[in-house]
Amino acid sequence: MLAIGGDHAATRYKECIKKHLDERKIEYTDFGTNDMDSCDYPDYALKVAEAVASGKCEKGILICGTGIGMSIAANKVKGIRCAHCTDTFSAKACRQHNDANVLALGERVTGMGVALEIVDTFLDTQFSGDDRHIRRIDKTTAIEEKYFK
Ligand code: RB5
Image (tube, rainbow, N blue to C red; front, side):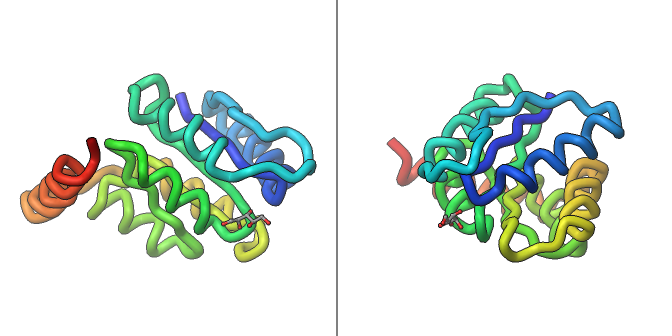
């Protein structure tokens, strides 16, 4: 199960991504928002990040105007490795190297065609499992352990 969420700047984009997921028969839970009334991106980042961190959802997709606010907020949740991507190279690398579990996209930055390729790359790429990447993720998690109470 995938978790998806966005703010008011991402509603149309989120609908396009959901249609794409439907076509691929990928199940998802939509955590909103579902209209274009102004709202606060951390509220939706938290819902998606908690769904992923708790294990209810395997991965998440967060969308805002730039993708930046969503990624900053989601990465405040313990266990979240949220990657803000604007290209498929990064989408592939964030899975292979960083084992990213949430993808952040920006509707005002990335065209829909590229965004769908980023989504597919993110969902279809496995973590490499290489020792050096595990070591680096473990070191990152240690930072989280040190500073997250
Ligand atoms: C909303 O105007 C915008 O600030 C938000 O969608 C996002 O881009 C924040 O990072």
